[in-house]
Length: 171
Image (cartoon, rainbow, N blue to C red):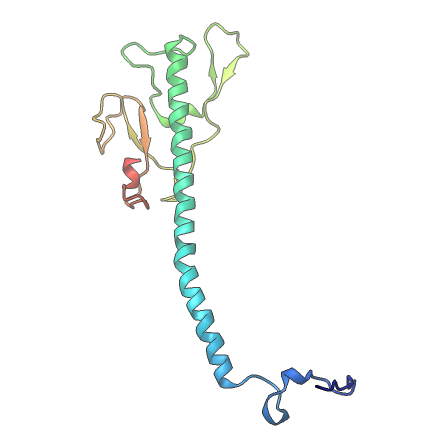
């Protein structure tokens, strides 16, 4: 049977912490093993963190595009319903993206009824700027240049490709 030694209050370090010959600390082998384990864990965690950041930016890009496209569609619905004045020969889409942030008086709703479709032009999370590619109703669906007649659609000016393999400009 093992005997238990009474606790010695004069010892400053626990018995399990002392190495051979009563020396304190870790051996070189123990330190190397710990460094190898930490390095391998960080090598696994770094790509995961990198893709997590990219995925977060892609979610922001989807949200900003959806918000602007919904604002454009709402502007078009208001102009089709006759609540916004439309210039003759236009399709009822805004002539520029900044027009969505301006206050518009609704026709036939009284002078105090004002509609604003967006508070501000959002920043493209991929480029870090508030610049977006524009397409007009008269442009081809995959056109890379804006005809300038109106704003029918928006897209990112980033040249990068998403995690799904589709370029951001095609989202």
